[in-house]
Image 1: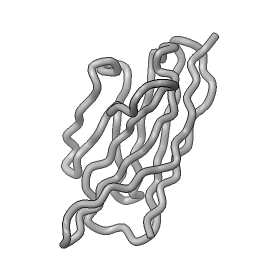
Image 2 (image 1 turned 45 degrees about the vertical axis):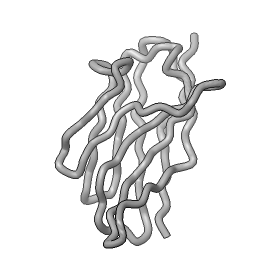
Image 3 (image 1 turned 30 degrees about the vertical axis):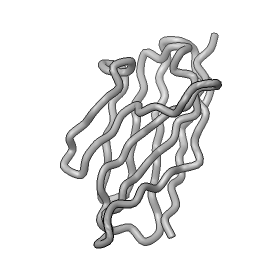
Image 4 (image 1 turned 90 degrees about the horizontal axis):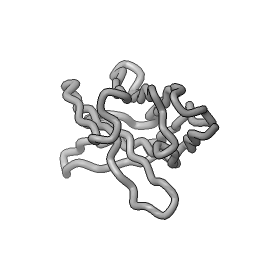
Length: 119
């Protein structure tokens, strides 16, 4: 069993910052890419940022230069530092972790944490 627990969401004013964390627990081996996705009301889930096991990062154009993804492999944890937040960043943010088994990769998702950007 693999469990992902997200934390750090909340209400913030435009221009503010939040830091999301996602810790994976359980039988963790073959830890691959880790990432953050978000889903706003009435919209599809979209990639925000992801980071490979080697540290290569990829960002959605809408968050480049504002968000930073990082990971701590010793803690099986991925972070998302969000700066200069905008109302359009309001969404439920989900963590995704890929574990690579002999049979192939498998995705695990967290339950999500709500980020609300509003004055």
